[in-house]
Picture 1: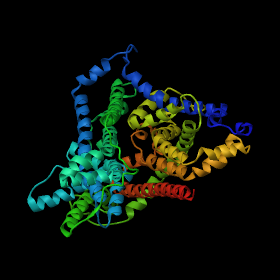
Picture 2 (picture 1 turned 60 degrees about the horizontal axis):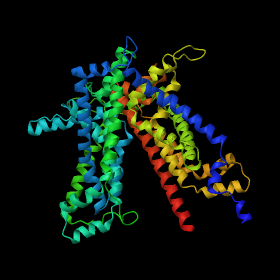
Picture 3 (picture 1 turned 135 degrees about the horizontal axis):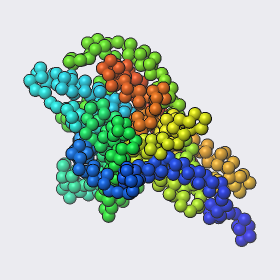
Picture 4 (picture 1 turned 135 degrees about the vertical axis):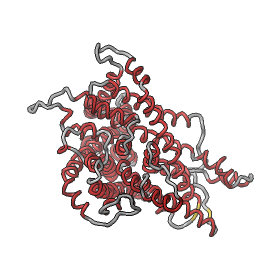
Length: 576
């Protein structure tokens, strides 16, 4: 028994850690308070403050709801977000069901192509969609010639809905496909034995069991569309909440309370959408009786059924890949106006884009690289503190970091302007809000949840017994983490870095508020500037294609590392 007492218990293993984790936790908390909690709190405080007397008041919100423009903007934002969910569902549901339900060639390719829209910023696709589906775009020109009609695909709010639903529908596709793969096959077989087939089986059994994945994806689509800034601005649709917040702050000034009131409403609506998605699942049982569920039983298709499925899939893919096709044509076209296709083709736009946009590219590599590094460091520390220590309140670090998902980029940008504009930098005396480092911090704060989830998943694959063994052999905690834990987490850390980098590289909502001078602007801001003029759209499209390739390669690289880590884990589990 005496020998057994020399082996540290799991409790003492955590309790031996004291000042190191505590210092790290306080440092992380200080970062989150300074760059997430305080900016958001400042926005909320100003929204409830009277500009003249400085006293707390509800008058600003009353003024908001008295304004016809703001009421219309609130309605339009809610309408666009809701209709985007509906249209995104129409795109995602057939693709998810067909590829999960039937055996036919190309299912993996179809799923892969269905994820492609996520790697391009929606505001870039908006320009390409105008050329394809606008009143004088390719599709309407053909409809006018053939049938004498013109359809308002891109008119007003319709254009925002179409662009946003195409860009964000992969969130529903990814989550719904995962849910369909986890459905217990025995439930479907039992329903079939009781006489349920076809649409009745789908409506009564399959869809309800897949509902958790669908609601998770739909809530993400709603929040992303509700908060998006770039797409409405490029389509000249300003009567929505996010554009109104940006326009009030950029035109009236950072002292205008209406920009802050709109920001608070954006936050509340984002939190409300997430709460609704959680509440919809509460009290309902979607569990399966076997591990992994087994997925839906796939069946072979007849000749006519195969042709019908391919027709549906190809039609949907043609629509959701239209922005990429249009962007590629625009980047290679000489002149594209009032014609189905460009008048000619050239590669000159790419040369112009690289020459003129090199400062934007260089800034993006620097900003997104530093932000991703910060995210991996913070994500690893938060994941380790939450999973491997017994610090009181350690889970709150995870909760606060993940709360960044509910904060729209435009709100964070406004908060940074208000909080840091009155703080002067040392030596130069310029406002801290005009420093390019603030853009880096904004990107890091916005993308921290992505890196945190990758780091947490990677740490879960490292057994605590390996650390215990290292410490029992006399290795200090720091050395154990450096020599044992981090190397085993390497694939997940790189995946988190790449994911954070790729998403930060195309961030516009926060950065558009914080760019003080064009020389400090990142790539997304440069793309927005290019797309403002007809002359710049060719080079802007070329730059957009380059961005899509970079982000696509980064996404593929991250996915490859994740799959490699899973295979290694499976092989290790099999060997033991």
